[in-house]
Image 1: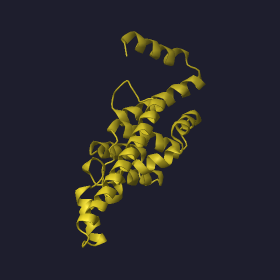
Image 2: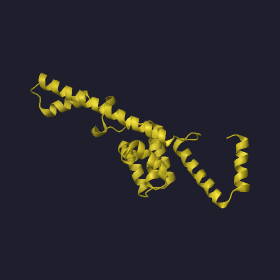
Image 3: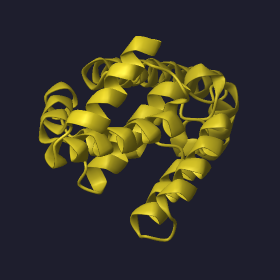
Image 4: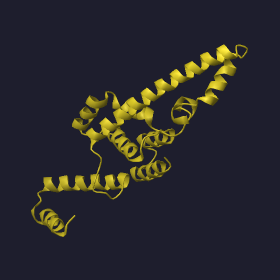
Length: 193
């Protein structure tokens, strides 16, 4: 913030704010502190509409990759059955899982993979939106924009969160940890992604 802008803001707060306006300023400061904890000390916080499009595109891409992986697995199973009919179904499944572990060469979530594959900054925004929605702090317009873009976005977000993130969110929503502790732990969990 330029020095002149800071002086203008301080002048407004200290000399001209009504009690209603000071409440708005206080709420903005609390929100900004939360954004800094989640995203770092940057001037840019992700746009919810743009973020929803990026997440939706990633979900669609993951679906296409999973479909391709399934086709490859089915082809491998047919080939093994033709070339080695003496193998049992369990042996064929074990061979196929070893040769074709899932999209990107990693085990899929169903097979026990731990990584979400979602970029850290997008995951942080998803967590912030999910928690804001869950505790009733999300603006209705933001919820409607996300639903318009993605449909049942809270379900999609929850399914895409890594297990550790789900546990932390669950503990926070149950009241088992303070918000500052939750934000610290989420920051550590995001650094592990």
